[in-house]
Amino acid sequence: MKNIDWKNLPFGYFKTNYNVRCYYRNGEWGKLEVSDSENITMHIAATCLHYGQEAFEGMKAFTGVDGKIRIFRPYDNAKRMNSSARGIMMPEIPEELFVRACTMVAELNKDFVPPYGSGASFYFRPLLIGTGPQVGVKPADEYLFVVFGGPVGPYFKEGFNPVKFQIVHDADRAAPFGTGKIKVGGNYAASLRSGQRAHDEGYSNCIYLDPATHSYVDEAGAANFFGIKNNTYVTPESSSILPSITNLSLCALAEDMGLKVERRPIPVSELAEFSECAACGTAAVISPIGAINDRDSGKIYNYGTEAGPVSKKLYETLRGIQDGTIADKFGWTLVVEG
Image (cartoon, rainbow, N blue to C red; front, side, top):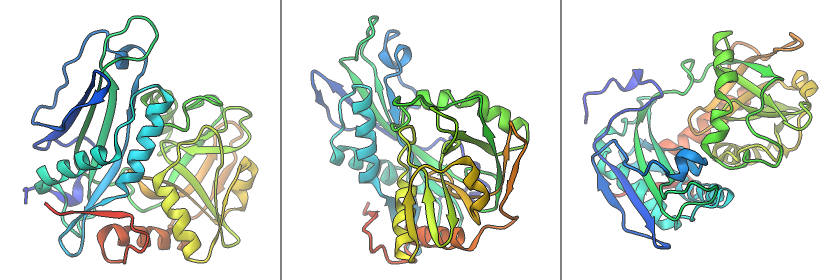
């Protein structure tokens, strides 16, 4: 086991020993290759550099109470990456190749997977980029799929404690009927300016509204949003929201706990009716929201200084499945055997 301060890890890049790569050439995927280099060499006219042919995933592995490493829902990440690939005309990756690459990264870097009880996890970043040269606006003929990863701490420094968000009206992370439903870098580039401003003004991130009318809640920064009221788990439905695998998991757990689940548009005015609100995603898992401030109107929605009981139970259940302390009756985890 590496001499790493597991309990004080930031959420950021951490150099490990190996990454895994695979090239798409001549209409087919090659073999998985192991590399110890942190660099990629590519053509100056690669489509990822000029036309945004780039998609990525975020996923995690955990060391369980039994000492086994568990990857959480890797096949769902494979499906979502292929949805992104279709969206910007890149070749789909065979699911077994995707999952094998992630498993190899966990096996090759097992000394960097945080121990059980540390509060940290191993974060994977699968990346698919167009590497073939084009000057005209059209898809590449060559692509690179690479998976790297490393140990991370909580996405928000507050951990599982309430954070503050800011509603913004002068920025959209994606266009109506655009790329909001797929995980491509352009969506995140579009959120950098407003996200930094929110940080500068004392907030963890932004609440983005639907780009068509700015009347409904869309996403909470780089995460999905949910609210709790009347024993109901409510999360937005929109054509510009990334389908979060964490949110999908929480919907299943909420139903299993006896809550009603509603996926529908959430008017901004409804924020006043929720007893709990939170952001959810792979990086943050669940980040309870203590307050939301509307930057235009100045209206503040308060949800308390501690995580609500439903959010807490959802978080503990999901983390229990990931850690192996709660039976995985949904079949979400893949145990790494190496």
